[in-house]
Structures are given as structure tokens and as C-alpha cells.
Length: 280
Image (cartoon, rainbow, N blue to C red; front, side, top):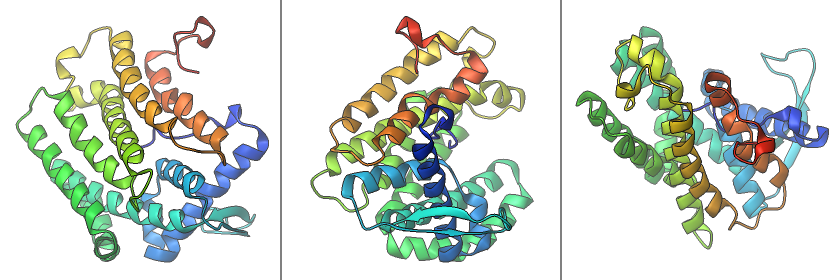
């Protein structure tokens, strides 16, 4: 259910694109430093969005530098990092670990089981630091597992389970902006779940895997799915617009208005933004 909250860097100014890449490199660096090299296997662009959002809202002290890594051993890459980078790295690790367990349960993937073993210690450390978030993750995954095992035709219930997970992740410290952060996370989580179901419908059907839209396999679904996704994203944007965001607003807008539609448009075809009906 990840890989959607990414920027379309070709639509950003060069400074914005560079800052986006540096934020991602900072997240990768934080994962490796906090949880070891194997944790980098769980790295998701989506968590960079969370870093940028929380950093823009709370404006913590930021650190920067340049560094090489196993992926880029020769040319050093700029990185940006703050307290929310470390928070997102921990959430990234926890989600990665639970996803490996889920893959093991689903497919008996030995590779996923081995990866989970490498991440288990880090996950326990994250649970000790953030019990509320980890309990919410486990609770939501259990709810999703129950829906899948019963093969319920219940996209709303499944999306709600993932929305509840994201609501907890988006609210790291409570306070004044907690309500809007949680509501935004909940709506965005529902959007991400439905987006993933739309994108995986064909593969899930052919492999006999659970998908809440299995009954729509073979139909013309582009407009139907797009309308649902617009509604869910619109709710997330309503709360997003209530947050006093200045720093990196251009990157966040790019992700929410353009990047989130990239994979959908590739599969189902895009709409012309000039007609006023489609995403950017």
C-alpha cells in the first residue's frame, strides 16, 4: 500500500527537486544509522512525505550534509535530517517488518521471513519508543487479515482499517494540530488502500488473492475508481489546507496533486488537466 505518495520531480523547480531528494537521502541515512544496513531494504518514498509534512508544520532544527552509501559509493549525495526524519525512519522500519510478516502469512515467502528476522530487533526497539503507533499498526493489520480471510466484499471496512493506522502515524506528538493531522492521515490511508486495490485488481484476480473490487474485474473501471479516489483525497486535502504549512509547501502540493496519480494514470490513462476535471 505504498509507493503512491511520491513527487513528480519533473514538475518541481530544481531547488525543490533537490530538497526532495535530500530529504529521501536523509531518511535512508536515519534508517541505516538507527537500525542497520538491512533496514534500508524497507525504505519507502512515502515516508519522505511524512517527514516533509511534519517538518513544515513544527519547524524543528534541521541538519544537512553530504555522504556516500552502498547505493551511491562514489558520488556523495546531499541529505537533510531532523527529529521527524528519525520518527519516520522508525515508522518505516515498523511497517516494513509487519509487511514482511504479512507476506509470509500470505505467500509463505521464505525471503520475507528472513527479512523479518533481520528487522525483528529494530521493531522491538520501535515498539518500546512508540507503543501507541505500533499497537495501531498491529490492530489494523489484524483487521485487514480478518477481512481478507473471510473474503469480504468490503472496500470501506478494509480502507477504514488502513486509515486508522495512518491516523496514528500522522500524529506523533499530539497538541494543537492533532485533530487535522489525524483526520488527514485517516483519509489519506483510505485513499492509499483503495488506490492499491485499484492498481492490483488484475494481478490479484489472476493470482486468486483478496481484492475488495474482484467483482469489477474485466469492467471499465477508470472513471468509477477515479471518482472514489477523488472523494477520499479531497477529504485529506481539506484537512491538509487547514495546516499552516510554508516550508516545502510546493513539494507537498506536488505530491498530493500530481504524484499520487502517477501510477493510476499509467495503468488507467490520465485525464487532460486543461479540461478542469482531472488531476494535475
